[in-house]
Structures are given as C-alpha cells and as structure tokens.
Length: 250
Image (cartoon, rainbow, N blue to C red):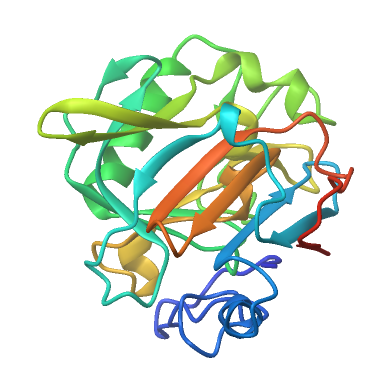
C-alpha cells in the first residue's frame, strides 16, 4: 500500500488504486468475480504494528460493521462516500458536506482547505497550556510538536489530542460514524516529535477532495462491497491474523 507518499505541490497524482484494487472492470476483484470465484467485494485490515491482509469476498464479521453508501460523485472510479460532517472531540466543527475518498495508495489523510484549517485551529487550541510546542525545525510533516524530551511512541502523547469523527448522514439523520482516534492521525518523527498525519489537500492538487489514507484506516476491517454499493468498517482485534474463509485472503 502507500508508503511515505507526500506529493510535490507542482504535481497531481490521480488515485488509480493499488494492485488493481480499484472499482474498474480491470480490477483484480472484478476479474475474480467474473470467473465466479468470489463476490465483488474487497477488503483489508492494516496493522499499526506493520503488515496486515487483504481479502476478496466475505472474509469479515458483518455483525460489527458500520456502513455508508458508495457515492457516484467521482464517476465510479474511486471508493467515495459522503457527504460527511467533521466532528472533533465529540463536538461539531461546523464543517460539513465533505466528499470522502478511501485510498490505500496514500500513506496520509488529506482534508480540503476548510476542514484542514478548522482542524489545525482546534488542535492548537486544545494544545494550549499542554507540554507540547510547535517544532518548526522538523520538516517530517507540515505540523509537528516537540515535548520536553523526545517521544518514542504515540501512546506517550495521544492523551493530549482529541478523536476525530466523520459523521455520515442521510436526510439529517446520522447513519454511520467513521472514528479517527489520535493514533490514527499522528506519527512520531525520527526526531522524536509528534506530527499531524492529516495534510492540506489543495497544496498537493487534490482540491476539494478529502482523502482517507492508510494512517486513518489502521487496525480497522475495511470492506468495499461493489455489489451492494457500500463501504463498511469495523474494529479488528488483530490485523496480523488472517481470518479463516472459503473466499480469498492474502
């Protein structure tokens, strides 16, 4: 999947899918489905400890899944959903109508300008009087903070940050919520600082696209059901343990 992909401002990288896992007829799952081998369903579970697995068909526990319809706003080329509202620390941010693309080809998550700047403002406000200071000399990512001593893991610092939620609704009624805890949007740099793994999409040519990358899908079972036109997610006890199934797992 994606690894350290930070695009240059002068270039635009289309979201073509990884390993033929997109929605087109040439995708791997579509070819397997056309041969009657599996349902046209693909999923993955990416571990925060490294590794994980992908699967085709029904290799998941549907009882623990949350679902939202696949949106056609991106011409059926990507796994997109929406509109969604951004929630920070359990409170509405006033940022809504977000179109979302789930993309394993990107290491990080990207928000449009409105959502990104709202998030930066809320995070900085939350960190006021906390033992974290902006680290402008750390160029790992656009926003990094240092502590009194270098951090070794997210567990040491996640208590200073609030969880995010993308709330998907239909007709004003909340349908499902995609939770992004601090450990799913933060990284520890080589300098021992904590950095924000959510970037400003317009700076890399994404415009109004809000892209959920690998970092925000860690330790979740993600399912993309092309037959029912649904995107689903659920908790995973262990993304390093491949589930037993009659369908295909890799």
